[in-house]
Image 1 (cartoon, rainbow, N blue to C red):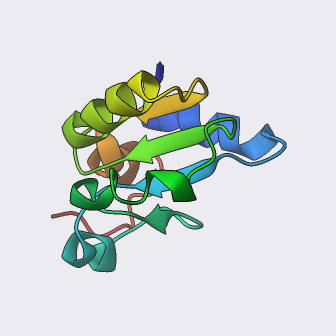
Image 2: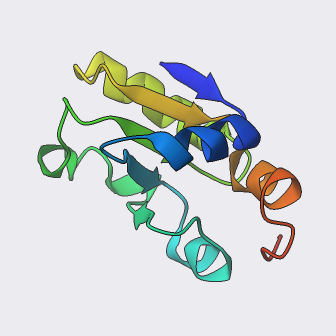
Length: 106
């Protein structure tokens, strides 16, 4: 697993081909408040049940509020055989601070 800061991820997404899956593991109410454009919501509590919906070969960026839940999910996905996992270090909160200050913070 790679850990990227918000600015590192922003720069990476500008040139990544194909674009990685942005997997947001927060709760629906959190996703409604703010989200990174193009992200897919799949709450942490549903990851195991939805594992077959994810491609273990596709590069996947795991996102949460501060980076703790995403780190745990990223570790678990690696244990399940996923090899192209990126954790957003600092979560969407860091993204709002460092990349998109207009984003709602909570």
